[in-house]
Length: 133
Image (cartoon, rainbow, N blue to C red; front, side, top):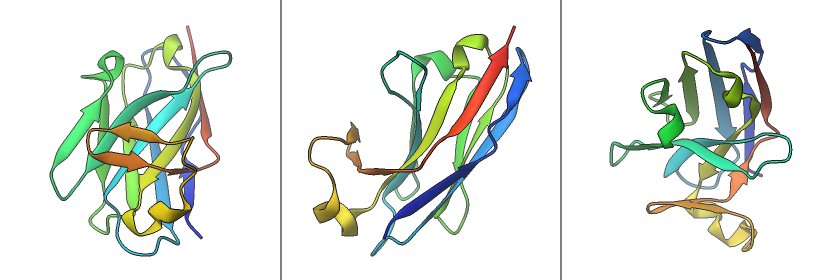
């Protein structure tokens, strides 16, 4: 069974930094892409960043460009999100998500994220990031 476990969330002052990490396990074959989305109370989910190591492609939502950096460890099952110059509007619960082609048949057809050619159908329980002004 696919599992994604996030860590690294915390409360920081505006201008501070945090590093989120996520470890994926239980997928049948390989990992196509990993990424992060966030959700603040009362707001819609927002894809923050994605990375697809085989193609070298990354994606960032406009509001985090230049401040956040996504990276993936050599083993491919770990993704990190380095966040700098944090702002109060970055406050949200951050979820790690994965695109696992061998598990597509288990995806919920109505609840998934598509970013480019990536199809994210699994995510973790989330880690809270709170930025105070």
